[in-house]
Picture 1 (spheres, helix red, strand yellow):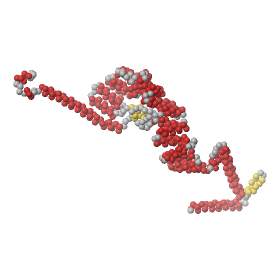
Picture 2 (cartoon, one colour; picture 1 turned 135 degrees about the horizontal axis):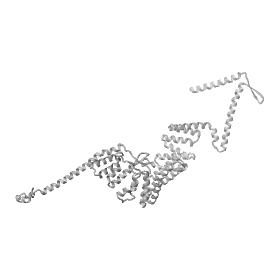
Picture 3 (tube, helix red, strand yellow; picture 1 turned 180 degrees about the horizontal axis):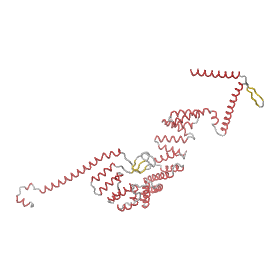
Picture 4 (cartoon, helix red, strand yellow; picture 1 turned 90 degrees about the horizontal axis):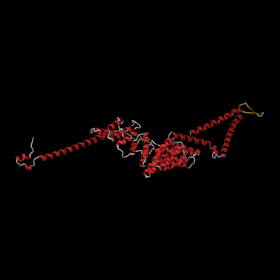
Length: 507
């Protein structure tokens, strides 16, 4: 009611103002003289004002006409929406304002508001390829998966937005855990945009998870051609895929294929320890010990590793400890002072029963960097040198609660694995396992530490029981011996002469 009254008052004020202005201009006695082509035209102030307004209207109409002519020209040359956009310019402005508000709402995390603004923009613009993108992202933001799915399906139907729709559906399937469908959608998306880095990475990861090593190598090559992957990273990942393929071939009994693929993986990445170990062992099985020795030596030069030492030992399986120690000098001469070198030499010296040399090789490693392996080696050295059992048990007790040493650790999630594999078992990340020292928490060591008194107590009880058993057996022997020497009760009536005769002389 108040607003209606206010509008009436404003209208009356405008009419009154116009009437006052017209009356004022009519009462003015001055005139305006306009000279056109040598002729003078006398204008009253009112006629001059009306003429100025008409001139402005004419200029405005001229600009409108020019804009319409431009729109018609664009329509003729192929822009089918040029005339409609010109006629709906005001609606278009409102639509783009609503679309901009929707995008700002997305940036602010207001998904519901973004959806409403996008729907409003669609009413003005009639551009679903723009507005549906905002709707889909807003639906994902608020967790409305059904709306997001329907929007992505609508985007798939348009050539301009098909890739975005397929990629959105792929992301949804990944979130739902349907990796098989997600992999098919990723393949379709990559066919639409072969150089898209995000789709290449997703497809590669899915192919690796499904053991599709050939497909993963093809995707990896596409990423290299697109410039989305450095060449050195491509070589290493390609080597890992080749190694995985070789393992599958080995499991299927395809020894020759496995040997060729493993050798190829080792050539591409000589420092890849699992590839070197497999290639070396297959070379040994093929009767090529020199090839195996070269493979292990090259990988050992990059990084010493126990698996490489084990493969190197298999080259000559029946050799004596002394000969093995002599042959291993080829590896021990590299990386002097490295913990793996010191541990390996100590183990070889123990096998050769040269315990002082083993102690010298190990040095202070058991004190400065104690691990289960180094402490166990110290226990073996003490045992070999004839130390007391309590000394040996003390080293073994420390080994129970000591860190495990270097292990295969996932750089992505920190999960420790017993053996190397292309993908982490915990997070499925590719090529994330590295051989490194693992720091164990106090909580991880608390259980074994609490068990120590029980373990040692049982060992001591066992020794005491064995000792008591031995003492009992010895006592029984003594008693039996004493019974044999004692006089038989049945002979108590013998004469002293007989007894003196039968008894041995006493000194």
